[in-house]
Structures are given as C-alpha cells and as structure tokens.
Length: 135
Image (cartoon, rainbow, N blue to C red):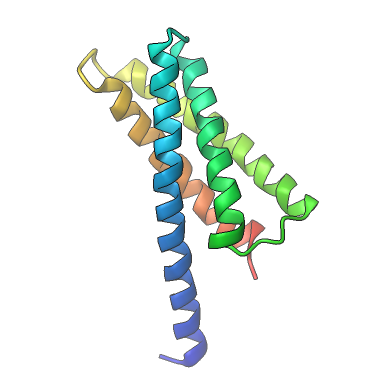
C-alpha cells in the first residue's frame, strides 16, 4: 500500500476511534440527562430533546479539537450547529417512532435510545469527517 493511502487509512482509524470514545462519553451524558429528566416527571419527548442537547454539546466541544482538529471558527461552528439541528430532528424523531413501535416492555426507553443514537451518530461522523472538518 502506498504511503499516502496508509497515512489516510491511519488518519481515518484514529478519527473513528476518537469519535467513538467521545461518542461514548456524550451518550452517557445524553442518556443520564434523559433518565434524570424522566425521573423528574418531564414529558418523554422533551426529556429526550434536552438530553440530546446536553450530549451533543459535550460531543462538539471534545470532537472539534481532539478528533477533527477544527479551528473553531464561525463557519465551522455554524456548519456543526446546522448538522446537529438535522440530527436533533432525526434522533428525537427516531426515538419517538421507536417508542411508538415497541411494545410496552422493560427497557423500551433504552432500546429506542440506542437505535436513535446509532443513526444520529453515524450521520454525524460521516458529515463531520467528509464535509465540515475535511482537510
């Protein structure tokens, strides 16, 4: 394999590893916030939305510097916020769809969260790597 191809593959591997690690931390923030808000009696969809905001803010602040080495400029910030707006709709919407489709079982909130989180995370990585933070 040629040196530039090896370097590009190594960079992708590093970014993906970091993104997954940061995503794990952000998912814990999101899910913990979501569960705390539900325990406080908040409407399920509002609780999910606020949990998403907490987790996404965490992810942005860490990924911008550590994963993608972004410069933090206004254009970059605006692009990430537009992406997060889209993934907000996708994640909260998918969570609602899953809650509507799943039978009332133990763990339905967690199952819906995992599906919604997985879809939104995939979208975020692909767009951030190929559009917003491309070098």
